[in-house]
Image 1 (tube, protein in one colour):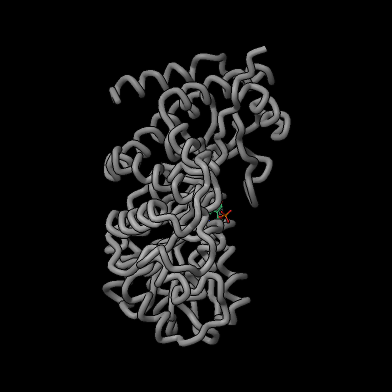
Image 2 (tube, rainbow, N blue to C red):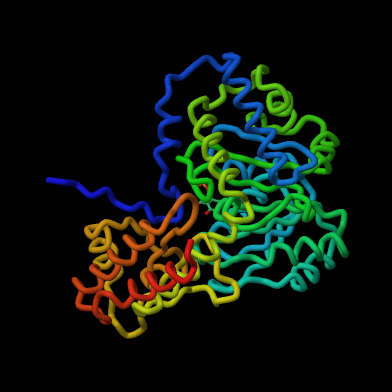
Amino acid sequence: MIKTPKLLMIPGPTPVVRSILDQMARETVAFGDANFISDFKGLVADLKALWRCDGEAFVVAGTGTLAMEMAVANLTQRGENILVCSHGFFGDRFIDMCARKGLGVDALKSSWGTVYTPDQVDAELSKKKYAAVTVTHVDTSTGVLAPLKGVCDTLRKKHPDTLLIVDGVAATGGVECWMDWGIDALLTCSQKAFGVAPGLAMLWASARALEKRKSLGAIPESYFDFERWLPVMRDPSKYWGTPAINMIWALKEGLRLIQEEGLEERYARHIRQARIFVAAMEALGFKTAATQERRAPTLSIFLYPEGAGVDDVAFRVKLADEGVQSAGCLGEFAGKGFRLGHMGNIDKHVLVGAVAAVERACAALGLEPKPGKGLTVLQAGLMAEGK
Ligand SMILES: Cc1ncc(COP(=O)(O)O)c(C=O)c1O
């Protein structure tokens, strides 16, 4: 029997294309291998240049959570204040992390599906002295995009001494964002909009962030201390922790694909694909949790049609049977819908396959409308774009 592979449509890990998988399957070499050192050096240099970073880019084995902790560990010290701007589950993750570090934590929280404004951030920051502020660019639990550029501008104008930490895990590589907007630490990991398998944490630190780290002297953390990794990032023949050799090759190939596409075009593609995909899903009766103007280009929370009495687990099991792996909703949206990623190296075939599977799952559960309505909208959108 021919087995159709399941489309990996959860909001990370995202589908990994063949050329990246091939890098993971290469014969592993010593971390002192001259060709590997040159590959690693080139990768770090490209990351730094592409995201307009005046400090350093770090690539270490780990996940997005490690990168979040790395940012907090190196940019703040016990006793300082931090403002966590959260619009969901992953924004909230900073609260506990920062409290454990011994920081004075205040949180600017938005109700689920909405997000704070730059003015609200300004008002909070005006109440006391904050060493740093965190923003989650896209919260994966809500599919809402934070007003990052607006926050950057506000900080530059009104709170220039406060460092800005940006969690770009569900955005970076798929949504526009540059370090020279005034970001001090931008963090992400390999398995989301970069389209690489899980395993690597990435962090861009501004020159000012590196200075702050230096001013702290010895810090309690060791594995992800900037001072430990800086010599390695500048000269990968140096050792601190064993580099994840095959993953670094995989990320290098991921970045090559990004460069081939061009970052600007990649950002534009994510916006186009999201618009067309969401329109098709809306034609099937689903609503996004995010309002149109704050919808993330990288993933969506699709809420079941009100009053349709959809059994969440039954729907997602059927969808998986039909070939699409989705994720359940978190927090206030749990049971009310499902999450689908549309980021990274996805193409028309993935979108068509996903909408077709959703239509079959709806039909199997007796939901309106009849199959074809979503695909008609999707195909029209794809053909209108012509790309
Ligand atoms: C916005 C955001 N931040 C942080 C994380 C944590 O990343 P990881 O699971 O790789 O530790 C996630 C995971 O989905 C995320 O979506």
